[in-house]
Image 1 (cartoon, rainbow, N blue to C red):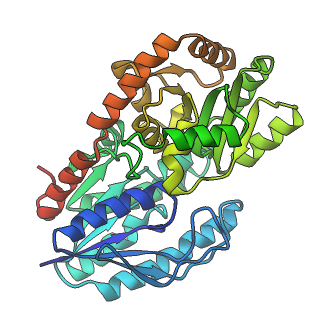
Image 2: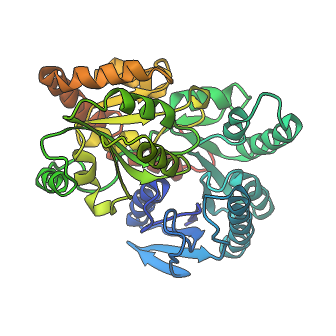
Amino acid sequence: MPKFVFVNRFFHPDISATSQILFDLTTAVASEGYDVLVISSRVAYERNSHKFPSEDFFNNVHVKRVWSTNFGRRSSIGRLADYASFYVFALLALLRATRARDVVIALTDPPLLSVGISLIAGLKNLFLINWLQDLFPEVAERLLPAGEHRHLFKALNSARNYSLRRASTNVVIGSLMEREIRAQGIDHATVIPNWTVGPRLLDGNHRAEAETLKKKWGLDGKFVVGYSGNLGRAHDAETFLSAAKLLRAESSIVLLFIGGGAKYDELQDAATGNGLENMKFMPYQPLESLGASLSVADVHLISLDPRMEGLIVPSKLYGVLAVSCPVIFVGDSSGEIGEILSSYGCGVSVAQGESATLAAVVRGLADDPDGMSEMIKNARKVSTTLYNRENSLAAWMRVLANPGMGYK
């Protein structure tokens, strides 16, 4: 019987989105009696000073955590050092832990992890499955001025595509991402959406806790527009800030930001500098309180730079829909999320930079309880069908049952 080895920089009990879905999948695989190993780092996604033990066991899943630097995400040089050090020690651990015909599943943190793993897979006759949460180097390339570092990105893209062709199959999380890699000549791919994590998100028992949080945070009686999770370089903080300025006279409306990220502190400083009392900021909440913290909001903001369509699917979408919350998406209305909101009637899309439209949409939703009620019902439906945890895990088990044949 083969061993299944998953490689990702973060793992349970870390709070990152990939940690959570990876925990669900590895638990499911181990419950079928398979030998499951996770190779991850000892550091936490958000708490730079926190260190996890070098070895752990959860639900019959063996976790091997390797050393890496821990500079965090505030410095590009520090982040690169974190990536490189984990990359080296994770590959060494993989070399020691595997034997011929084992199956290794490579995620995408750090970027280009699949390149080194594909070389080891060839050396040791391993089956390789890539689980693409995003597409690098395209993400970095599109965030830079056109043509900058063109030759470097071309080389990185070639190396990444080699690792995708070398794999038994490539699992992507959205249809536009599948289209993106097929356009580059990668024809063995399948879409398995990510899913809602957290056992209490769908059971509805978090409502009372959410009301307690609303009172604690001074939001009782307010129409709360929430944002939960990472606010990074691929997201649009400027449109949020400008809309908040337009809504500052609306005493019943509050914009609540829970999380962190490259733009989180910048947005908080800008809100303070502009005296925007209608914007509130909270740190990441514990996973066991996720249902409550998400349910504090009446409607959730999600954003994605239109240049990132086909490269990223914001993971915050799954939890928001799971607690039956409508979405205001700031981005491309014809992109992955925009199409879902339009097709299922569970939210509204606003173009990036259209702060006046965003402010008008917020006012309109606050004054339309019947429309909100319909979107709430539709959000729940999308979560239990399109992003159903059991369906996605079952699709994964079919992939893993025939690692040399790809997904059928």
